[in-house]
Length: 637
Ligand code: G6P
Image 1: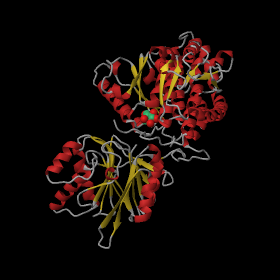
Image 2: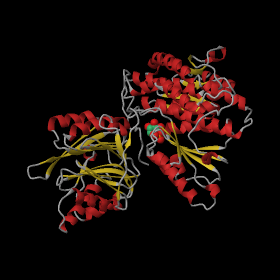
Image 3: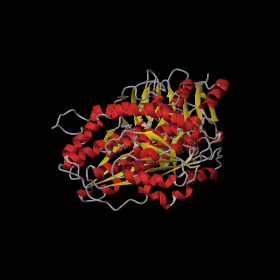
Image 4: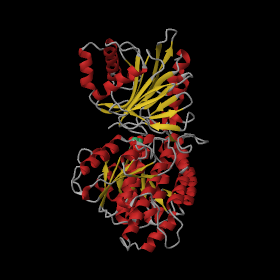
């Protein structure tokens, strides 16, 4: 989704801004722009603004042709919310004089009334965006302050922005430059991420860490409501009340923020291939080798979070919700813990009655999904309002970005540690989320002691031993299915619809298979619990509609095979995901997955789902890593 970069220092800003935007491309966008301030002989400056619809290359070409000199500037990649993805709606947006420029991520919810108010006093709007009210408001405030005798300065720009922010409702991160003060940059955030990177005599501000790659590892993440004035000499940071704040910068860990495709054709393929490593890291971090007596899993969770727990509620969107559905199955079947899964966007406007002793888990790879964050914040609020301590909030986050807004909101985080994921379609972060749930379910099961749903403590330990084999199993599976799925892709050239079937713990994997295919190949796909097919989707079946059926040995194996027979009787092409053997001969094509404990099977069955979607989309020549209309980090409601 939208990305911000802003630079102030002593070198030309535009090349670094364009490079920063390139690092943010993976988030998804449909237009881009930069504005720089060139210092002129008079001491004030000239503003240069370049914007272009479509991919960054269009903006880069425009920059090559027209240039945008200056050592201070702002840049933006836009994912359309208010107004079509056209050049006139691309950021930066300027005030009426063309001297002040603003980029913004988020949504200004009261933009309509602000726009009407400004139009009533003669302000002309040039775009359909919510953002454009900001340059006009800041400009008006600057004019008022200057009419009172104030001289143009960075401090004046800071004050004007500080005065305007309380007028804005919604969540935002923004950056402002003004031609009158070429050596000043003002940035602010409220409920949307913004980080300041500290270089030598220069500062780079960005909405996401990859934009800081190659610039610095020393960062100052801005807190909610903060505003900062950046000059080549330093940072002045203020809280929402206008009080000066001092904070020590932190270091970005490792090279996790560097996006590198290595020799793979797409980031998504590289990330699918990284899953054995994701699993190996998780095993090393969380499965202590303690023999028959030590704890089953090591998780960084305080007892206070888990003691006396009676219920778990999981809030998530998209792929993360599918991981949560597998998680709910594990928590109920392995740990005997009643668990509900919610679409975060639905929870916000229809939460269930409050239950006591409840753990609320936000599941989000990016840690920035607006709906998930808002749902968590709402739950925190309504629980805090209860006098009874049994209802006190207990918030846990499962994320790949512990430094995200989610990380700051919750009491504890399970960091899935998958390293940066660039492909918009989540793969290794999904596996990481699944593993986090295996860890949580095993930890809760162990705390309960005794047998749960027929699983004894010894059986749990055996499950953990099997989990240790996962990295090797994944390694073999990824290599095998990469080849097989590539060979299958040509069969889908004319396909318009695909049905994915699964049952029990593999039902969410069928949903995930369908979502992956939709997201990157634009083929219509639906996931169903296999037993539901006869209640509707069966009407769609004919020889043109492939059915992908997950059939893993266990409680529902025979049932799924019968459901597959029903599809076969309607001439559907049957693709099976399951172990080789006489049972799975019913399938026209089998994507073989070794028979493992049914509870562990989603960790394996998801691999053919990912690779099938990937190869179908790649065969169609589509932009696999940045599918149309989608964004990696959905920071709007
Ligand atoms: C977007 C992405 C999906 C992702 C969803 C939730 O829609 O395109 O791939 O599953 O957001 O993202 P989160 O960061 O909360 O996991």
